[in-house]
Amino acid sequence: MKFKFPSAQTILFLIAGFVTLLTWLVPAGKYDNLAYNAASNTFTKTMQDKAIELPATQETLESLHIKIPIEKFTNGDIYKPIGIPNTYHELNPQPQGFTDFVKSPIKGVIASADIIFLILIIGGLIGIMNLTGAFDAGISWLAKILKGKEFVLIILVTTLIAAGGTTFGLAEETMAFFPILIPVFLAAKYDAMVGLACIFLGSAIGTMCSTINPFSTIIASDAAGISWTTGLTNRLIMLFLCLTITIIYILRYANRVKKDPSKSLIYDQKEELNRLFGLDKLNKNIKLTPKLKLIILIFSLCFIVMIIGVSFWDWWFVEMTAIFLVGAIVIGLIARIKEGVFIEAFVKGVADLLGVAFIVGIARGVTILMEDGLISDTLLYYASTMTEGMNKGVFTNVMLITYSALSFFMPSSSGMAVLTMPIISPLADIVHIGRETIVDTYQYGLGLFYLINPTGLILAALAIVKIGFDKWLKFVMPLFIILFLTTMAMLTISVY
Image (cartoon, rainbow, N blue to C red; front, side, top):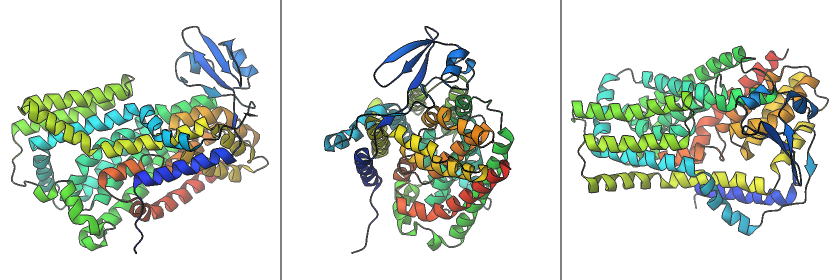
């Protein structure tokens, strides 16, 4: 009997089971943390069994061995509680049982409600777009425009999404791009893996080599007590280098598939994916009328307004979701879709992405198991102590691997930054390297493992495209190894 690789949901449940077991094996422990209260201009120091108020001054930070300017708290740059160095203490074990394991995906769905609703509303919007025929017209038009120059699509999509990743952390929002852009790649005679790679890897490389991303570079630099501009040149070089390598890698695979479709890693799914993305029913003769152009414009504006809102207006998931809901309604009015037909198409679009939303919730449940089991800080403590006595070259690369490992348990970039930077960045002083190097190892470690991290977004992305995790690993592992070796070499060069 031929082995069938498990589904994304099953993989995550197995991981949740593994983490549940870890809570029985790994000692429970926690660092004290410090949170800034803007209303009273005070700090709250939370310890094992109590919390105390402290004056929000530089002296307070120095007394706690936190080398962060007070302005980083008062102006809102650091808005989450941070770990306090040298305060780790073991606690009474909190092993998670079978009941906790069963409840974890439910808790995860509740905790991820914001991103889940974003995904579902985007699904509804796509359902309305499909009903109008605007996608068919747009894809047919693009296929004609790009004929013979389809490679431009790969370069353009990967670069633009990487630009979003490096500037404002474009990640979860890319879930909207898969159902929209995959048909375009299929119409260009590539396979769905090429479209998946351009979108997901573009986002991954952009966030990995973040330059002005407030959710990683800036918050991590602030938590490390340095300016985000420190080390910017190295990150720009890494962004150019890694993006170039990635685009060349995708182009080589894409050209191979275009010349011989049987070389595709998902060739056995060709007809299935064509049906899934409507290529088997694509109306190539539909004209891009002024009305359909206006609908595509409104649809595109949803993403443009979302990007502007996140970048400049402090928008988050509620505002982003509202934009896509309003966009769907406006498009429905322009297309003169009857109310009953609109609801039916919208709900069908939502249903198509319901499985993806559930995957996001299960993945969040894994993190909740760790938090409830009190083992996250323990792993951080052991990670920070094992580097004692290392020379700076070895230390830097060990920290890269350490952050990659930690990201399996803590995939949130901002959460990882505020939890680990106050603890780990002082280690840079001991081995005589700049703290910006710790910020780099944090970014690159998270970014590299993000390519294959099942607790990140890859399983959700694969669920949309109906590609197995095993096939993704077969595609991406050579690139992963190339990027890892490149990153290790660049980090080593930067500290000498």
